[in-house]
Length: 331
Image (cartoon, rainbow, N blue to C red; front, side, top):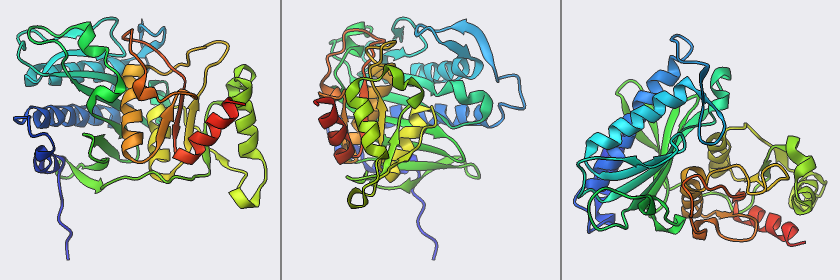
């Protein structure tokens, strides 16, 4: 007997009761993000056939080389969210300042996004992704402001990501669990494939760039050594898995369990990952799936945002592994 297929749009409509004060704006907003993801998926899948691989020739606000697909994905998200009518202001990892949405003075939502996370992997066909965070505006009326974007992670009402890999999967939460949808190219729809995702409390995978180990704090070095030691009772040594694309490493650990670490280093004392575009949305998902996300000492969702491109160290994943890492950091 054929199992009923539930599309992303059907699922969103069925869950509208989770937001009794909403009149469908959030549903339309999530639909717009899904539409932009389909267009980005199309270009990612034919990137080797058209002139869209390689460097764009510019540097973004983070000081990183911009890829052609970065620009394309950024443009698609801005266009989709601007035309929908639900967004008053946006912020992107690729833009220095906020992106004003003119003529939407009554729009209630704010969206922050990383249009193409892991873009350094584009040219080698490794998994990359789009990450998004949604908040309600703080200002009363008129154009959205920087202050609307500088909200704590706990103020998010929805967050998610799209991973473009062997299949394209959209994972999101509105604060009532985490669900994943795989794009079926034959019908052009995201279909529910990973209902009610829960991260295992214990796991045996650790993910970090050990090439930076000379710059790691002592607590991180001690935790990595702990992961490598043999111990039958705790199933050690653990396996090291690191792709170098945050959304890809996060997706694997979300489903299978594990810990992802980007610690402070001598070169990057505040870490490398961006609070608004990467950390907050994925920490929101991780907690909704039963995991934990901290900067090594404090819950990241409670960090005060003071800058659009603020960075923070991150320890995220299975609860017991993150707690163990924190114990090593405390010495």
